[in-house]
Image (cartoon, rainbow, N blue to C red; front, side, top):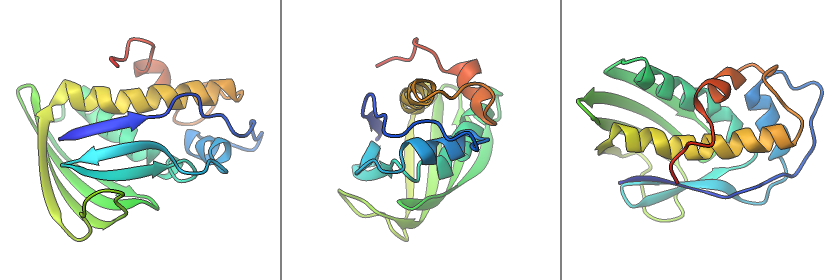
Length: 167
């Protein structure tokens, strides 16, 4: 099972004029947020996605999703974050995605994954939509705080993320 539960409208800090990328801007606006901006559920384990560190996995998320949208059927993505460090190997067949994950380090609020290999399968469109819900919230928070397409990495949000994300 794969699911991402998001929290709406988290705005804690205003724009830092020195931020050049989405990752930096996320660290700025979520810096003092007390807790998770979202929770990733992976095979009944719940992993908090903390506000001040989600910027560190933003590029991995958008790279993974871009690969899928570009029709790449097999690939690997590495995630390095305060709440989880993992290597995901994905394979797409027809409309399904299977991910074999190697959990190097992980903090779970429910369940246990650290040091384990875990496999998860679901519909590719459902997997992408779960991430898109999180990315829509991120885009809204960035814009509310004065950020725009001038940030490196914002092009993914402009191209793929809009109000049409399924709830």
